[in-house]
Structure formats: C-alpha cells, structure tokens
Image 1 (cartoon, one colour):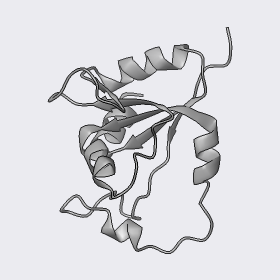
Image 2 (image 1 turned 30 degrees about the horizontal axis):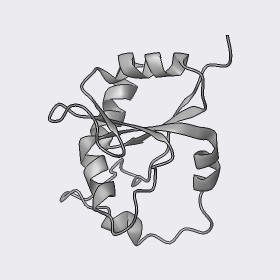
Image 3 (image 1 turned 60 degrees about the horizontal axis):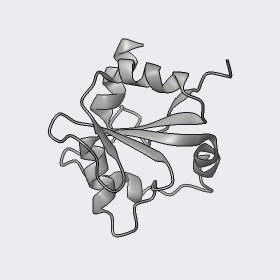
Image 4 (image 1 turned 90 degrees about the vertical axis):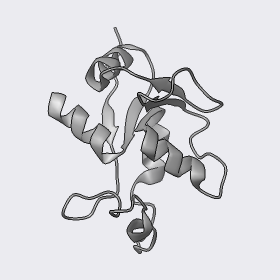
Length: 126
C-alpha cells in the first residue's frame, strides 16, 4: 500500500482564533498585507482534494471570479443539500469517518479549507 494522504488545515486566522468577522465576511483578511504567497502555491501543488463547509463554499462561490478550486475534487459538508453541482459533491456524513475513507484512496494530500466549525469538529475528533 502507498503512503497515506495527509489532511492539511491551511487557514487565515486572527491571533484569537477567528477566521471571519461576526458578519461572516473575510474583510479583515483581505485587507491584511502579506509578502509573498505564504506557502499557498506550494499547498496547491501538494493537494488534489478540498473539503469545506457549506458557508465557506457559498462565500467562495460569491467572489467576483471563477471558482478557484475547479481542478480539484471538492467535497462540501452540509445537511441542507444533497447530490452535487458543477464543482462539488455535497456530503452529509461525519467528517472524521469521511476523511478516514479519503485518506485510504490513492492521491495527493487533502486540504481542509474551513470554515471554523468544520475544522473544529474535525480537530475535536482526531
């Protein structure tokens, strides 16, 4: 059997642990000056799968640009939608169970994009 895939949590967060403003926007992150890409391009080369919650997916889809992760397998955790759309498969399954199955498949690493609740649920279970 080959090398087991890693799950990577790569997020922008404030020092007190917040990903978004109280209204759910990322305005604070967008206005933060960062030199270089902070390892973002290296991350994208390591992965072939992205996982996110429905709120994060909706925010990304709302950006005034093409969907940035279309070349990867996309899984969105939600209880409100089933099936898939043009970019993602919607998952109503316990995150740890789902990720453990994904890790057994061959491929590159897996990026857990967020949001905060999904990341917290996963970290709490590992």
